Length: 329
View 1 (cartoon, one colour):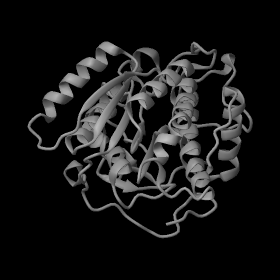
View 2 (cartoon, rainbow, N blue to C red; view 1 turned 90 degrees about the horizontal axis):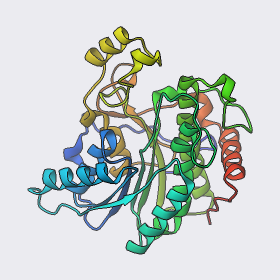
View 3 (cartoon, rainbow, N blue to C red; view 1 turned 180 degrees about the horizontal axis):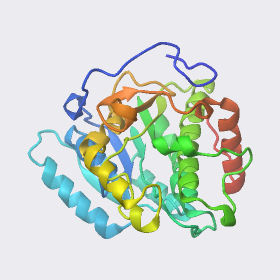
View 4 (cartoon, rainbow, N blue to C red; view 1 turned 90 degrees about the vertical axis):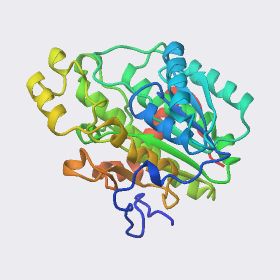
């Protein structure tokens, strides 16, 4: 199903009622990468992909935590017939050199890539620069996944049916898009706004990638986005201490009444990664109250996220900052 110019699908579709991990089809012979797979949404995503037969590469910043996660996943899936293998390759998405090293190592091991889940991210940080000199949240959440996906395009093309999944957040509604600019000045740094901006950039990237794939006639790669809602791993544990997003009492109340388990929060990601009816430009999130909890549903993001002009601007600005062209041909 093609997308309209603005990236929305041309037909109304819906996610099957109460879709969960038991509905995942066989992923035998598929190769997946899950960034930030040592905890939270990434950890659950890696478990379920491997449980259903995919060989999963855990792409994590900390080798010790990655090794512990790998062992835990192997233990979790060992009784499941036909489960996939678990590998580990170190990846720090805030570092462009780490992304390049990771990609080179992956391509030495694998000819194709079927599922790329760009899950790794950080939030709620005071102003700090990455090793490359970029603001850390934007570097980690946007620049790293952009370069990683570009570096793995040839492997994605070799898959009969590849999926690229961008993890966004409901916080993209708090973003303040400025044409030609990815970073806020240090003296105006806002943890909420910068994080929201990075999550809007994730949507711009996912939808623009889908448009460019279709324009290039590449039909075997699908680019989609999702968000987990409010899970017990998605809000800052020290929100009250730092005054970020929520006061402590409100954080505790919401955590007790509105958040859902990490396993439920991972369902939109899993649906986006494996469901057969997923199309370029789709955006999945929890279907319950305020999209904070519930089973996966097909949703619409903030209106600005569907702007081809804004997405193309962020794409070009990202290329200029990183010094390379992300060619799709």
